[in-house]
Image (cartoon, rainbow over all chains, first blue to last red):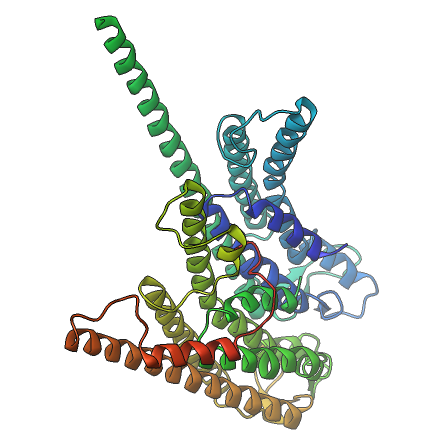
Amino acid sequence: MSWGFLRDLLSGVNKYSTGIGRIWIAIVFIFRLLVYVVAAENVWKYEHDEFECNTKQPGCENVCFDHFFPVSQIRLWALQLITVSTPSLLVVFHVAYRENREKRHKQKLYRSTGKIDGGLLCTYLISLILKTGFEIVFLVLFYKLYNGFEVPRLVQCDMRPCPNAVDCYISKPTEKMIFLYFLVATSGVCIVLNVSELSYLIFKYSIKCYMKTSSKKQHSSKSDCH
Amino acid sequence: MDWGALQTILGGVNKHSTSIGKIWLTVLFIFRIMILVVAAERVWGDEQDDFICNTLQPGCKNVCYDHFFPISHIRLWALQLIFVSTPALLVAMHVAYRRHEKKRQFRKGDQKCEYKDIEEIRAQRFRIEGSLWWTYTSSIFFRLIFEAVFMYAFYFMYDGFRMPRLMKCNSWPCPNTVDCFVSRPTEKTVFTIFMIAVSSICIMLNVAELCYLLVKFFLKRSRKAGNPKHHPNHETKEETKQNEMNELISDSCQNTVTGFS
């Protein structure tokens, strides 16, 4: 069980996505998942070992590290990736439910089980709203937990058992900051894509609905005339 | 999920590339990605642990390391490889879009559609002409830009491509100026020069491919202008020869572009 599982999951979702949805999946795969696995993970690999405080007091470093990093940024990043990819499963489940129904009733109930219309459209829209919501929640969480996206070189710690205020130095702060900004940028791009896809689908199906109702009205007014 | 996933995605693009494009992909996979994974990552593996400063002052090593290496070589290469590979996806998306249109035509029962079944559409290799030519050329152009930007960023951040043995650091909290020693400087210099050399080869291949596409485009246009009765469905001798060459060199890899076919 590893990131390959998420990749296979998202590949399955790709079949039932719109064009913008596919671009979103490509961005998540390449600029978020791949960058996380091949680059970002290694930057945070020895963060605890390399976190150094200007004291010989045993336990001080541990306590200070725990105070400043309640949840490591890299773990938060991983959780964000998983949480943001999961709403797409709703669409996969709905399509599977449709296919199951057709099998049970042994007849064609839908024009195409994978086509985004009717109930599947609602599911798709809900998944888009959830994805956007989760992205925003995690960005806000990052911002609140770490007071912005900057990583300072030095933090001052006065937790027990540290004697007085002690200087603690974070390892590779500039590199971590660069990757955090990269994370924020890609999250932002994904939010924009989700919002565009949402608007596009709502617009498309509103027009479709409007055309249907206006053609029905025309049809019924013609039959009234006869 | 790792470089193998990128290889799967780009493998699908290989079918629709020119011969130079295929050589570029081979150089990318073998001399850049593979070298990065099997060798370079090990060389830089202990970079901070073995970065030693001549001081007992806690925090001085961390601060000096951060000052001299704002972003590690290995991470910069990984990002460079990802960015340089991404424009090929534009081509993959365009091909997928064309396939989708042909499938739609086929399903509608359009008589203009010359395919016998869906499998033929899936396996078909599109020629680089029309809008696909523009997409392909733009992707090469973006590749060139990304390569150049990353090479410049490298040169700018590390003052050249040499890794010094000793760096003098006087950032706070280091007391005065302190000598800091980089681990494996010669090995790192060798790999840096190797990666830069291969990047340069890739840039030259991209430039060659761009020139080839432009020359081919202008030749075709001048031929069309010179021969207005030329029937678009008849291939010229050169085009037939090029197609045969492409078929011979063509990768028989059955990998499809992940999610784009």
